[in-house]
Length: 293
Image 1 (cartoon, helix red, strand yellow):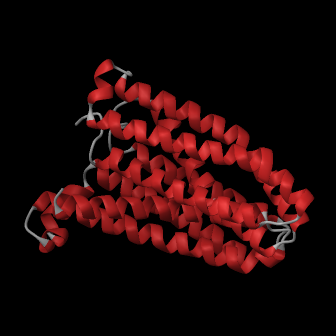
Image 2: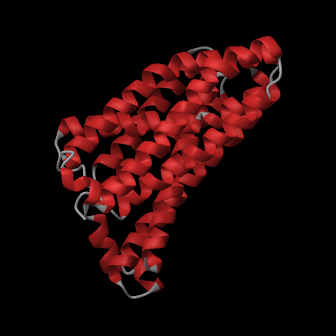
Image 3: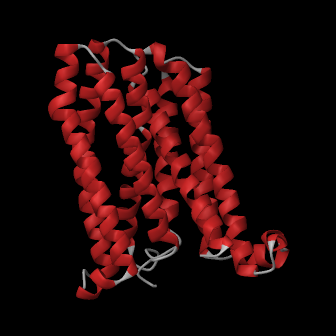
């Protein structure tokens, strides 16, 4: 791979990571607001995602322009090339993603300036949901899925949104096991488990639908580069699902009875590492080895 491909991959991966942090952080602020001791760390975590994602988005746009110009670093700021990119589907995705991030920033600001009750609390929720959906929808405007119709767009939006929430919620869960007592930690993990079950089912269904729409599950898929990376992603998703099941069936009940959160914290860190690997493989699928290749 050339330098531009590495830079494209890195900026896209950081964008996925920043989005997951922002979405998971805001969802964590909403769901965990009764546990006020978690508030300061959750706010810093959310702010990290809200700042990181736009920076990665702009960097990704400039890198795409530079790669297309093929004139070195200066190509990233070539007015003609930037105008061309702006008028393409990449520019459309940038506008929608920027709007979604702006809404998430507004939601976070409302949360910082208001209490946990009243109209402002619900305004924060509505703004957050609108921002999350808008940001997730931006991924349907460029890439392999843009010509697949409305059903695929809705499916990808839901898939991106749920994956971002799941990956971004792992740090708030770790934080809960780190700062809360065992009884409160158990309450938080039980709540997340109840929410995660339907979310995981939807993620799996959406993922299978998207892969079928893009590839048709043809026999040639197994021997292609795309098929290799897709199978790797499936294996990583299987690993993270096994970890999630281990948490729900063993570690969460053990936390209530034993009162020791060390095993849960280590397992959540492992799940976070697997999640970051899934985002990395997703980046490769999106940038380098899509079905069109």
